[in-house]
Length: 210
Image (tube, rainbow, N blue to C red; front, top):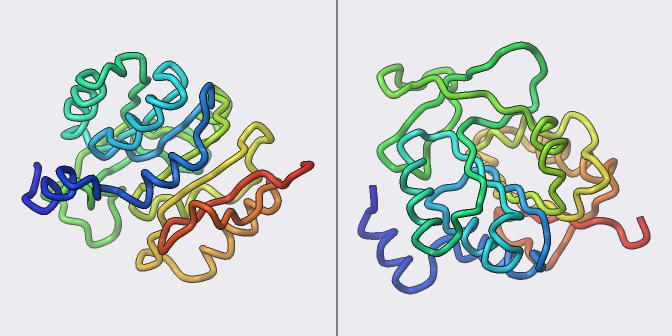
């Protein structure tokens, strides 16, 4: 799964560099962190080193990556990080599973869409954002979920969320979806956070005094 390009970035400290910098800027000791999209477990490890492993929950949909994430966390001494398997959506209803498309490049795997290769699709647990926010009560939410973020901003988020950092995927949805994300965060008492924001990384923070 490890390409030459990713290996070189890891060796030079440039892998997920913007996301790592965002986490370093906003995660504090004791922060409860919810990460959506574990990848290799790299950002979860950074968060665990700062906040304490017991305060970090990371979610990965791709079943191929689960042993990789768990092993990387354990190798770095973060056995107490909670690793969940599932694809996160904001949808309501009684569905317990959702179709997920695995890709050769692990970072491009995503919830299946129209036109997805049926040979690469598997069923994975469906995890609702509202349930995760209620159960783990995160102060900080970090996400890189290949476009699935478009389903997570139909209702205001709870007050305990103080910071949100996400990678946008504008090629997967129109500008109106980005507006919906910004409007939802505003309705949740969060405003644009210029510190961690860069390129497609968009950050929000709790309004001072809110």
